[in-house]
Length: 130
Ligand SMILES: [Zn+2]
Image (tube, rainbow, N blue to C red):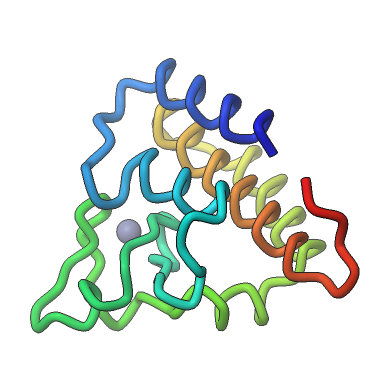
């Protein structure tokens, strides 16, 4: 578990992207470290930024990272139900091969994929913690 957080931190450190307070590295750290239940969070289906569902439900909410509007947010547990570990793994590989994407954004979204995979693996029945 620690390794994922470290990896994520270093991905951010190398990226030119400036993490926002709500949806930057901190948000995923909270989830990966299990400090808050994933039920309280939503994910942007475009850039995979997470934000608290309470914020997402605000009127005229926009993803602070990619500017998608609220409709493109899904509750995190629902997103993980629809995206199995295998699916996320496949999406991550496809994203890694995407052309014409800024290197910083590619690294950032890859880190988010890895966090989602970690979170989904943890939800599997009988999954070993860590
Ligand atoms: Zn977004």
